[in-house]
Length: 327
Image 1: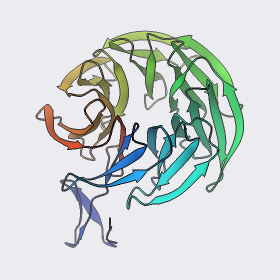
Image 2 (image 1 turned 60 degrees about the vertical axis):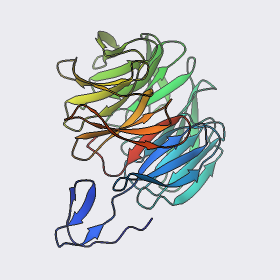
Image 3 (image 1 turned 90 degrees about the vertical axis):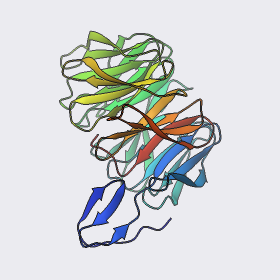
Image 4 (image 1 turned 120 degrees about the horizontal axis):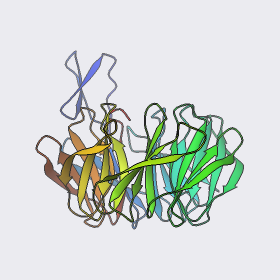
C-alpha cells in the first residue's frame, strides 16, 4: 500500500487526505483484528475492500494505536508477543517477544510506561519504555481475570476491570501498587474516563448497563447505572468531548451516552454482536467489528443505521485507524 508524500497542508474530506494544492494522497487504512484467525485485515476506506491479511501471534485479542500514532500494536495473548504495524503503510515494523499473556494494553499518555492486563494469569504488568525497548519492572497481582485498562490524563493511575470477580481496581503508576478496589456490576469489561479524570464509565457485559463511578475522592463511589442494552461492552469517544459510544454485544446495538447528563441520547441497531469501535475524523461514522458475523460494519450516525459491511476474518475484535475523531 503506497502513501504519497505531500509537503503542502492537507485537509480531511470524505475519507481522503486531499492537499489544498490539489495533489491527492491515499487515506490511511483501517485495521480490523481477527482473533480466531490470528491476523489483521487491512481495509481501504475509499474502495471498502480488504487489501491484505497480516499474520500475528497466537490468539490476538486487542490492538491499539500508540499515543504518538507511530505504531498499531497487536497484543497476542497466547503467543506472548506484540506485533507492531505501521498505521500508514500496514507494514510490520517489529515483533516483541516475552510479553506474558498480553490481553489488553495501554501506554501512559506521557509514553513512559507500557501496561498490559494478563487476562488468563490474573496480573497487570508494568514495562518501562525508553522509546525503543520494553523492560518489565513490576508484575501486580490482581483479582480474577483482569480485562480492560484505562489510564488517567496525568499518567498517574491505571484502572483495570476484573471480569470474573466483578471489581474495578486502581493501581498507582509511580509505585505500581494497588490504591483501591471496589465492586462493580456483573462482568465488567471496557472502562473509559472523563476528560477531567473525575468519572469512570464501566461496561457491564453481564448486564444491560454502564456503571458510572466518581473517582475524584480518596475512595471510589458508584453513582449511577445507565441502561444501554444487554452485553454493554466496549467504548469509543464520539469526538466532541461530551458523548461516548458503547457497544451492546448481546442487544445488537450501539448506544450514545451524554457523559454530562449520564443518559442515553441515541441508539443505533448493529447486527452480529457489535464489539470494539472506531469513529471517523468528522464524527459521522462508527466503524465497528461485528464479532459473530465476520464483518466490519459502518454506521452512519445521521441516518442512524448500518450503511456498509466488509467481510473480514473470524471473530473480529477491534478497529483502529489514523483518521479518527479525538479520543
